[in-house]
Length: 321
Ligand SMILES: Nc1ncnc2c1ncn2[C@@H]1O[C@H](COP(=O)(O)OP(=O)(O)O)[C@@H](O)[C@H]1O
Ligand SMILES: [Mg+2]
Image 1 (tube, rainbow, N blue to C red):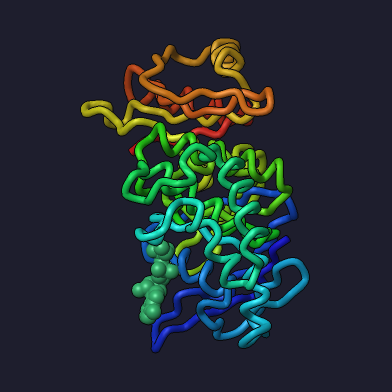
Image 2 (cartoon, rainbow, N blue to C red):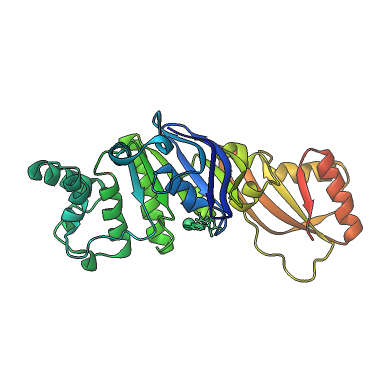
């Protein structure tokens, strides 16, 4: 498990992290999202001890990384696997030799590390590519080798910094399902940093929003989805941009456990004016309807009447600008 307590990081005058407290339970896949410059990479670097924290602690499996130095820090780092946007494989080495590399550094005998590297390549679905050099592999395959390499020292946690940002949509899906299946098979804890909400939707159990070096929202996916109107809930269930010419007539309705049919039944029973569904996103997550719908009313008065009826019925609504 991972536990950050009031973790701060300052770079000559710039506060990159201001007192981050966060815990990720063992076996969980936790997403950290935030805009560029929010402090995501700094967080990961402090968590691995690559960057010394200014204050606070970063505890990984009971060990405070911020308190470790030298050889002890290098040892602790082996219990943390890292995956980056680009696999940065050694071009002169085969896929197998790339996976072996961290084991070689750790002094594992040749036969043993070779056997382990083969197992890992098999685990990421690349056993038939062991003898290929990076130039002979696709971006997705290179990332698989990078993941196998990150797992070579049998880490308990896997930190992924934008692991799919350089990949196309289909390859992204494959890498995400690989990460998810590795979590299930190896029982590792995964922290995945991303600017793509789709990554969170696809594989995370919980997520944190980082803004200007601070946590502004955190929770399990269920918690987030049942807090309509919050930034993460809106990002998880996006609406297409508003079309032109609907000024004052549009109402955005968030569904968190209530179906669209129930919303319409509620409106009808209260004698609300008619509205059309202009656009929307609907999903069923854990058997519950979750979504955001943009309704278009005849005019502003109709919108306001519908809005107050739904609000009184406990539905989260926002009058679109
Ligand atoms: N080595 C550094 N020296 C000075 N400022 C840095 C350094 N690394 C990061 N920063 C600053 O810290 C903030 C967070 O950066 P970063 O963690 O890279 O954000 P993200 O990964 O979310 O895009 C930014 O304002 C960035 O300019
Ligand atoms: Mg970054």
